[in-house]
View 1 (spheres, rainbow over the protein chains, first blue to last red):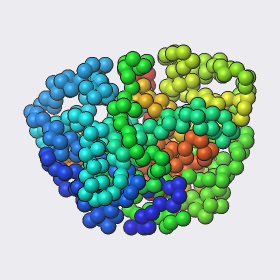
View 2: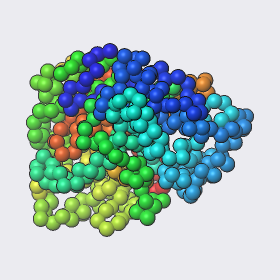
View 3: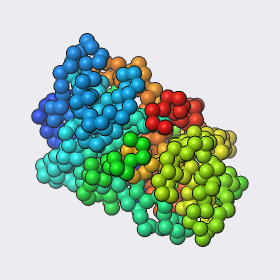
View 4: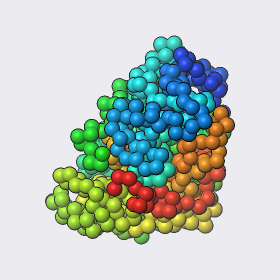
Length: 244
Length: 244
């Protein structure tokens, strides 16, 4: 391991390996912090810890039994978890979930879950992030930001990217309104979804096949640390939506 | 500067500062490679260099004069650069550009551009990326991936994130079809848009107000390096689009 402290303005992004298989009721924050210690690279103040939805859903017992031999047996769950079906094509359902997310199959998927089970999204992913943050703060004495990430498609671009479905200890949106560009002109681009960008950075080191449950981004702008919420800051109100 | 070589599985993301103000006809690849050398951290084989659309458009002379005193004077340009207007709300136009991107105001914006000018998108951002890659390869002897990035909104999520509008020397999409998850089940999530995720990682160190024109992600999966194209891999064919 090279020097773990990033130079000024630099980010380091690394996986936390060695988190044991997660089971319902597990203390995910403790497992992640301890795995980082075991790797010789403990969490530090100002780190942002990105945790995949899958392990959060397992720890919170959001697993639902399905018929392992029927590839469509999770479809009734998709309808149950949705408040509005937006589009259907073949087996694909794009819907608005009861959390307000617009995604395929209500965020339910089967990969990296035990055969015969489907993992639903956490009930409240901001709360899930807060729980992890609180464990790291109170038991390990470290102030971190936490992001719960999931993998969503986009309507106009192929390929999936990770997004933040919950945050704690970090703002989801960095608001640059009123700042000036290098020419002294007030910026037009003002609100950057740093939580989604951090989720993307983390995905690059977690991969989909490797079963890595968490990653760290070290060196983020300290002004982003503080209170935040995906539900309040990122989920777009259907009333201001042009495409639903 | 700490040790510039990332540990295995780790990414380092850092800005390239000191790129001079870019003018039409400038050799952007050379300016970036030289700025990295001047900082004592030259580009290395396997680095991915992310360059903002704004400086690419400047180097390629995609600047168009507008009436600096009329805040709507770029709107006719938006219509000219669009092949299909998808939605209007107040001054906001969401359209499909002639490159196939769906974004606000046809990707035209005014921040970090000299007063009295608007910057259009490059004609072919994959080609723009190839030019930069070729200069770095032939003149500096280094094999890098290059991503041209821009900042787009999303229909269902507030806040903007960076995306790749052109790539060279790196695939835009990592295709995991056929790989197995940690339980030995074939993955459902298969195509990850790593180019967009890398653009997001870079945005985190470039900021919007700082005028940093380029950043490096060091340590990416070597299997991603090779040929790629945003136009061919990422732009979704309107025929398979559920929301246009």
